[in-house]
Image (cartoon, rainbow, N blue to C red):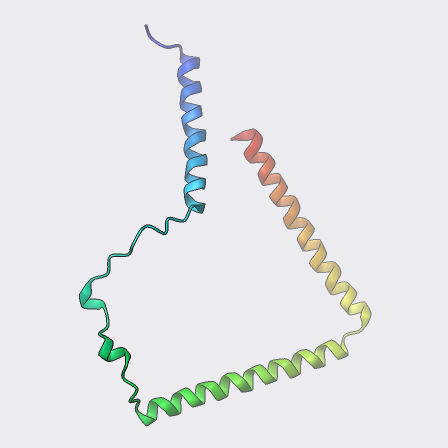
Length: 121
């Protein structure tokens, strides 16, 4: 006996909904059992990792990078302290209001997407 068209469409729709739900679930599941197969030609030897001899040029470069990062962090901290002192309470209020408005808009969009997913899919 052949199935009716409505039964067939209902079955297809059910499969599609389950497929969507399963794909979403699979995206958030973490399988820690899956090991990464690494080609031994691309792994480093222990002797390479333990080498403590570095060229003076490399040490100078690392010191320069550390110094640069420290200077940059100090400048940002000084700039942040100055801007907070200069801002009046009115400006702080306006900035907070703008952040609140964007948070409300994002929340409304997310609620709309959830309702769309519930009733349309």
